[in-house]
Every structure is written in C-alpha cells, then in structure tokens.
Amino acid sequence: AQSVSQHNHHVILSEAASLELGCNYSYGGTVNLFWYVQYPGQHLQLLLKYFSGDPLVKGIKGFEAEFIKSKFSFNLRKPSVQWSDTAEYFCAVIMEYGNKLVFGAGTILRVKS
Amino acid sequence: NAGVTQTPKFQVLKTGQSMTLQCAQDMNHNSMYWYRQDPGMGLRLIYYSASEGTTDKGEVPNGYNVSRLNKREFSLRLESAAPSQTSVYFCASILDRGYNEQFFGPGTRLTVL
Image (cartoon, rainbow over all chains, first blue to last red; front, side, top):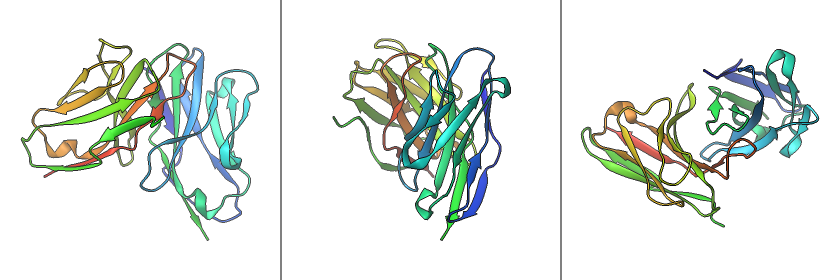
C-alpha cells in the first residue's frame, strides 16, 4: 500500500530562516504529488502540485518543491520564512489515474517573530 | 461558486447518539471523500465515492456509513457515536481521477463525550 512519510512533526524557526520539509513516499509507479497547508483554524489549501514536467515546482507564497524520482522524495522549501507561515503542512500522493489521496502525518511549523 | 460546503461546523454528541454530517459541492466534481484529521496522524480516508451511485471504504471506515445522495452531495453518518470518533472531519471533492487536486471543505469539529 502507498504511504507517505514526513520527517519532522514539529519545526520551529525564526523569521528569515530557510525552510525545508521532507516528504518521502512509497510507490513505484507514476504519482502526482501535492503539498497542502492548513493555517490555524482553517481548512486545507493547496500550496503546490506536481504532475509532470519540470521537477522543480513553484507554488504560492514563495514556496517551492523538488520532485526527485530516484529518491521518492518531494521536499518543500522556502528561502525565508515569515511569521505568517506558521501552519501545519501536509504532503500527499495519488497514483496516476488513482482516486485516493494518501496524506503524510503533517509537519507543524512555528515561526518565531 | 461556494466550492465545498459542510454542515455543521461544530457538534457535541453523547456516546451512543447518532448524527449525519452533510457535504455538498457545486463544481460538478465526480469524486467525493470524507477524511478525519487527528493530531499527529494527518488526514485518514474514511469513505469515498468515485462517482454518483458508488461508495467505497477507505482506511478507517468502522463506525461510519455514507450516502452519495446525488452528484453534489455526500453525507457521513455516525450511527452510534463513540469518544474515539472525536475528530475534525473534512469533506473533499475532485473533478476526476489522477490529474486534479482535491478541494476541501471547511471541516466539522465533532466532540463525543
């Protein structure tokens, strides 16, 4: 069965620090990959997605992610975080032409001002 | 477009009570999903409906039933609520398989005493 691993459950950074959140998945076939963000008290919103093409994907609010097929990874990055990036971040994977999205356990990011 | 809507936003039940969570989408999406979100466990799929008239179990279906009433609506029923069902429930929808992102509703926070 597919699974998604997010390496850190809690991350605390100071403003302007760089961010990298790890995500690895277990599935050998073609997948579509997503990062969702959930701000406190809100529902999930899409940050970025990868379906095909350039493995470096840019999303909203300055986030980007790199798909490395050989490592089954889709890590999320931001060069300089802001206090408003405090949220929980979820990596998710769906098999190509599949209809079930599998989520990682989430990473809670707290940015200190 | 309202997107994905859910009712109610909050609910408190006593053990053994029943209730139905409602979800509707106005994007003409084919597939709809119910997830529960628990701290440190990400989102886990309860049930999904790949198309009108079909429903399938997800990862954690025990204690729940669903109805895909029509293309727009997908309800989740707890027949006899248990404290272990205290969670935040999210409904989501997707246009079709594979190459589309899921859109999430605002969530229902359920507490079972």
